[in-house]
Image (tube, rainbow, N blue to C red; front, top):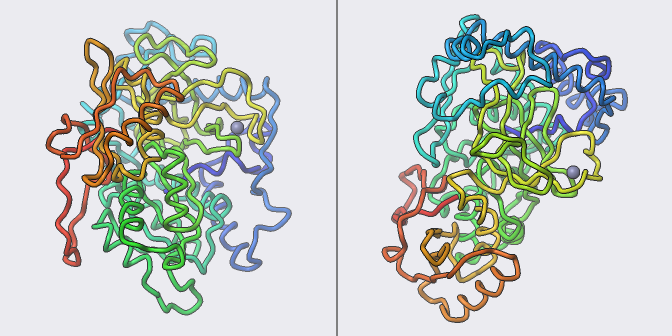
Length: 489
Ligand SMILES: [Zn+2]
């Protein structure tokens, strides 16, 4: 599904007038928008939804709306879910009395609690109709139940984002190369793309050679672009496509790509640049996770990640102490998706595990009215994950042509300090590569004690998987699927 371009939009007077948007209105807005586009080609000047005209809201109004939304969500959770009924019984605070000032008394919900017993978070007032799982590259997949009303909200927001944020129109053809088991994302993307009248192709994470062939193949459809114009992929699978395109001698003219949408993993700047150079089009990314959908975040032109305030409450907390993150420091995203936009699985102060840096000073950008963080830096796996972030490692490695993509590495804490093990191409000049990596790591202020360049994947210490490893087999594949010990994204 598409990210939350909504945060870049002005959507009617509801928010300005301190009223929540009705969920049925979101669906109506999405359908009206598609009708307007069909008729006029572009959203009308009087549209309630126009990009780049984000609503400026009085901070006092915002605080009051936030307090009320948190209270309503806490009341629904305490009343209708087994998990939060127990939490509030122990807490000794009535959810009706919760304010923004007392919000921090509500304990943070660890991911393992949701993973352990998803049903305990399902509202007795909702009808769970769809179970969506996370891909689980960071461990066991987390299951999240959705109601039909939840899905309608997600599809509506995804449709609005696709049309206004991404500029998707009837002539476009979108290929989905995310994991086929990412149910919520797949369902939303297919539904919103076809609702717009654009065409949808399901690839899945197939052999990259097959994917490139399909991207380059003329479609010959009347009224449609000749080749695939939009591609959705995880960052590591995009890296696998870039590797195949660069090594296989493909040119951008072989493809008709206009936009590549990346989600779910850290997208480094070098990978973005290499993807645009190898495949063509523009690479965009946003932040949205199954557990907290439809609440998400989008990038501004200054490179911040900005979070919607209408659909969820954002907190940045220390991953261990759960104390607020000071300006300039790294913290964990903790989100509370609001009712009524979330109807089935209710979560209060959900610890996403995703790390970002809080800006040292207040941002001065076009989305200044929305809470800002750095782009996602990685995932909390212990103190080392904040000292040397996944992003800093990927920025270092994915800029090097002598390191095959997706970059395979292991970061190991030793007595002398962290040691970064990297897999290079067998043809690489290891000494010169090491020299470059050391110089750039020093320049970037990375506190690694040593970098070790490996040529043989079997010599690389064991590492975690990436989404590109969730390879789906096809009968078209002639190449043997790669068997690599993994990496850590
Ligand atoms: Zn910004």
